[in-house]
Length: 217
Image: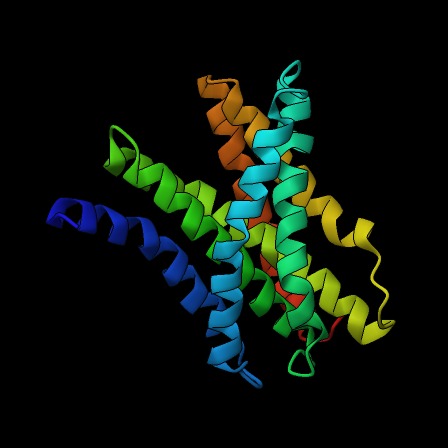
């Protein structure tokens, strides 16, 4: 790999790893095994491929509506694939606190976001601009959707036990992800600004979930 491409790839990977480290280090009580955290991260990376295949298959039938494509052709598929990757970690005996669900949810989501980021950044005409934009909004958006998913799944496990209520686990991530994608598809300044506000709102909600995870409420 050329030095330039290697540097671009490193820049594409860095936001995901930085956020992974941040969320992991907020697990004060009983940190999860790093082997499982990185396993979740790499599984998230792998699930980009089935998600991309399904998106490609249904992109034609859904092309009549950008709104439908954003929510059902992308967000539902990607968040559903993340859940398939995440479920085994939630069911693990190591996941015995609500914040553990946040650790595994963000790990899977950041693995997914990192692989996706590599494709977008390395293959773009202006990789530095794409990398900067995605580091600020797209990668965090994935992580925060994973946070919400992992928190709710762990909360259900701790309070009621499986089977999981998937509507509660997936609704917020799919709505946030779908709205974010749709706003970007408008290709307008207003759309971009509104998309950044969604990320900001998800950060606020994410911090609240982190606080609530200490008591699993």
